[in-house]
Image (cartoon, rainbow, N blue to C red; front, side):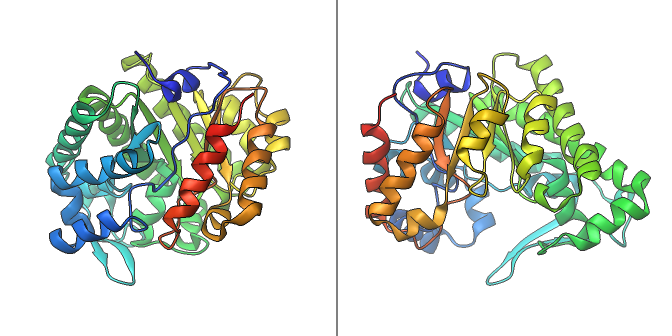
Length: 341
């Protein structure tokens, strides 16, 4: 029997709201920190399927979230495409060779790097209660490409935006390659047991409108279309962080089944501007969850009330911060679960 989260993503507007939190499996949990200290670095955890499954399940076990989000990383796709991937302490992820000065054709694909991720999904789904939804994910092509081109994250994605203007043919080839691998990757997650998937476009907000249409909307639409051909019953959540008023066009044109709303968007505007009946997800500021107090309760209820007229998955506007107190998460859950439409 599908649970509340999956039914909501399929368009049901229930009186209660499902809840899960982006980055809910991670460093704010003492059980995660203990396992990481035992097992080693981040990438080692991702590829230890028992550990990755345990980490995925930890927040559901502790808080009873309605969904379990796969413990992995968006850069697994370029890693499978042949770039080297390292997570360096204090510096974040690094990919090499950088495609700003190295040809895509010079990479040698290593598709077997995706197989352990599917095994993690299988292990989680076999341990997850039937009313909890297993969520898979991948990075959207624009965001993944920013790391592939520059070799690392950046504040304004300058090198990648410049390449896209300077040599759209070469950059388009990178995007097309990411699309193809991502479709197969998400399809593999679904075949392993993922019941819904999310596309993270974390750097969508750095693009001008015409570039947003070209490098965010069109590639995400291609992925959604291909997935719908293979898995028509599996909802796809699109999350173009920072897209602002371009969010409405994204929701209309990509074909996503639900759209994630970040914390910079007024939920009252989103409720009016997004297609009628489209499920939405979001959009509490993660810093409110960090700070807690009465303001957390008030703003959580504001989000819930704003989206009362449509299917809504309660979530943050982005990932939970590593220093977030456990008691604040518990307080938020109590507020969301007490709310009724």
